[in-house]
Image 1 (tube, rainbow, N blue to C red):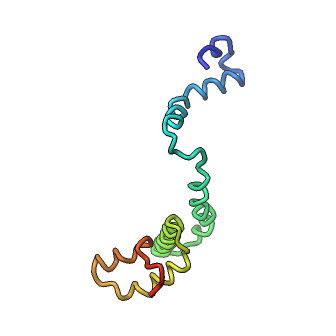
Image 2 (cartoon, rainbow, N blue to C red):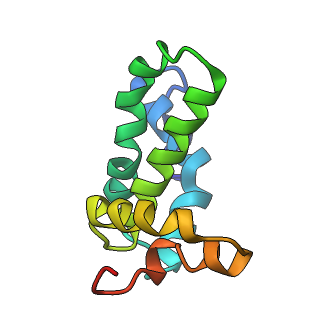
Image 3 (cartoon, one colour):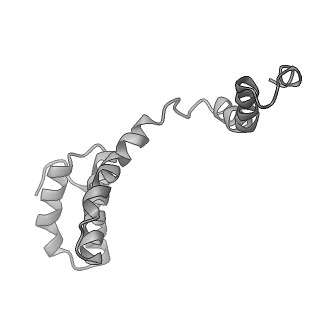
Length: 120
């Protein structure tokens, strides 16, 4: 990269590409040094897709409370998915148990990864 740059015009397409590569080099090296990082971020991209699709619908949220409720629901669904739990099954269990929760420990027990394998 550095050897190629002196003979390349900076404004040419190749010059712009080499300049971009030079600026991104520290990030590339960091990725190569850590073999545990995935080569693709598609799972991350796919997990935020519902938010991107939902943005259009959120334009029609009548109230701030309605928008907050939507965000909370999306958060619950995506957290369940991230923990390998069927969101429908989790929400069904959650909405059955939530009225019975009285203490902080009761609410803590309702986190997706603490859901029993067999619903109550």
